[in-house]
Length: 258
Image (tube, rainbow, N blue to C red; front, side):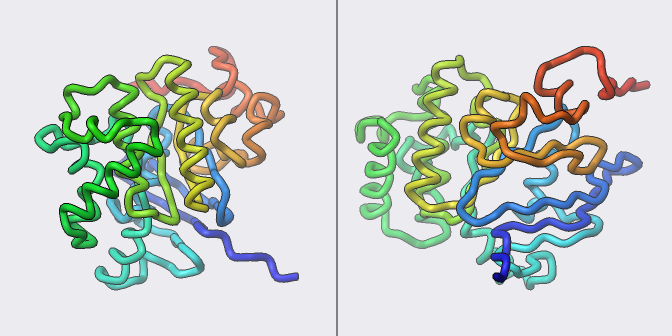
């Protein structure tokens, strides 16, 4: 039986900033229709990994495949066509303060897919409703929303164009435990409804186990462990165990800066 191609395959990915080597040969496979959670300490390169896949940062070496196609070798127009199939929920929402909620949600539809405003507004109202927000919220501005509502609006924007790949950057940061669980539940619902492949980076172990089918830990510029997300707290890997249990003592040491 032929093994299906991963939706996302990363091989030997490397990226340095000056003398700081952030990614040092990252290998990662994300099967289609699954959710992968990437964990790791601050500065471990999780966001750099996602930005490389998105095309926001150019890696120094390595290969990034989506549906078996090496996106790094594509011409700009074809590469943009691939990345247009990706939705992104940024850590702090990254909503446009000067636009009402509905225009934030429909921004990509109007700017990239040239959807007419009246149709875009209807789509925004539909998505907001799926996430438990009334259509009247569409008239508000981001500053008028609570943190949890801003996260839902940012999620609505990420899924508005029905992407087949979704990225989540610390989706529960700044939320209380209950709202964090609500956001995780909405993420799961969206991923299942769209049939998307998802990659999330997080420090929140409860969130990681709720939304992830699989998990991987990034440390020292490489993936040092991967396995079921349900096994994060009992991985048997000393690096993962120290990180997931928040232990002060262990193989992970804080870097000293001059």
